[in-house]
Length: 113
Image 1 (tube, helix red, strand yellow):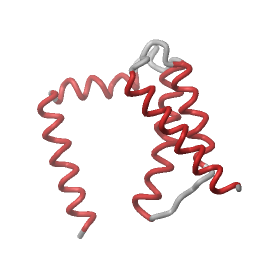
Image 2: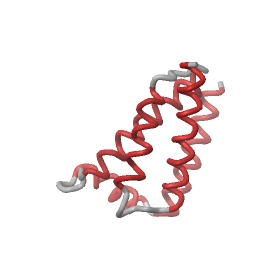
Image 3: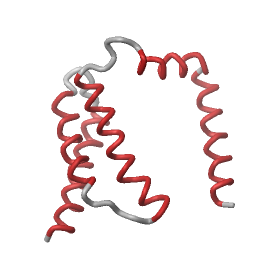
């Protein structure tokens, strides 16, 4: 039942936000993944970082399992994102990835020591 309720809430919020932004704008945004020239160094690092963070978060949320070794990847990709983000040096992105470096470091040290 929790999955069904969560799915309904997720779809409702997403539909509301997408309709406010405009479904065409959302579609155009997603289509960038398939355009030539999109996959430059920053966007590749960003995609790997996103996948790594999802791989850390999802097992914890869904199965209450922590795969601490994945924090080695998120530590590296968070540092790389700050480094390669000269074009998108947004304070929220820098702060989030700095926070994630700290989080990953704590988890790694906790599991090694």
